[in-house]
Amino acid sequence: NPAVHSERPDRHLLPVLRLVVPAFPGIVNDIKKPDQDEGGYTKMPLKAAYSLTQLWSAIKTDITKVNQPILVFRSADDHVVEPSNTAWILANVASKDAEEVVLHESYHVATLDNDAPTIFDGSLEFVNRVLASKQAAK
Image (cartoon, rainbow, N blue to C red):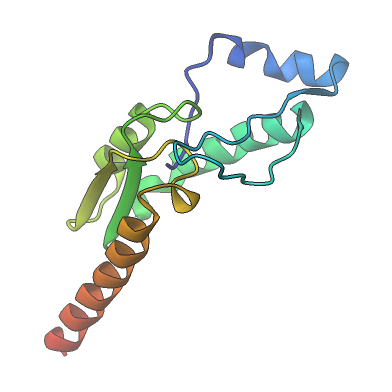
């Protein structure tokens, strides 16, 4: 569930809020699978959150330089990252081989959730396919 922006209404306040509020409550355990714990932090430092938005700006500047095959996994029901992030990434990469896999049985922390095998197997298949196509092109 990649993120390159946020649609949260309070996102515009972050540049100022980070100077007066040290942290917000953490966003943890967005996992559909019962009794699963990601071991996340109880607080989200706002200076770090602001730093993340600066990274997003750099990504948006350079995303068109991505011309290698790309595979993106996205949870259909993610309470942390909006689906528009994946749509934006796929619309802006230069790669001719860009694939999205929608995960229907997981929330945000998909690698610890019900769709983890889909991610692991799909990633391995993707790498093997890309390597095979590179070998065939030689």
